[in-house]
Length: 118
Image (cartoon, rainbow, N blue to C red; front, top):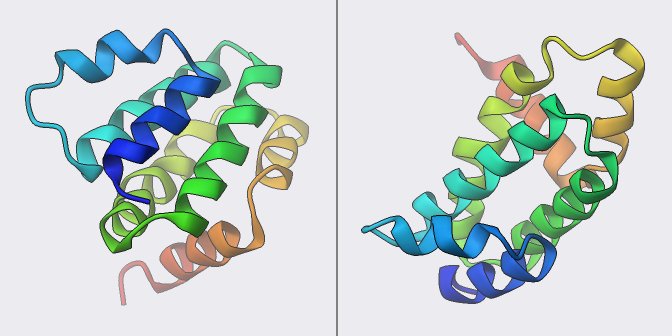
């Protein structure tokens, strides 16, 4: 899957993201994942659990089926900012969010957290 296919997948879950993705002059894996990550951040803050969990599942699918550029973008943008986005959540809500993230993405998250600063 390349970033154009990822855009199609993402717009199936969040139809209103299409305008935001079109506004972005530079469309590539990083810009698409940044826009998707920003949407997920807003869902977390607004406690929109139903669409949030569908979006996290879609992020997992993109990570699993995406090309190397998409995988790198997800690791460098989504995974990297996950701590920041969930910092002010209750422990219960944070655990619920992480329970909807695949084992592969959780491993990537752990690698980043535990290797940070080394």
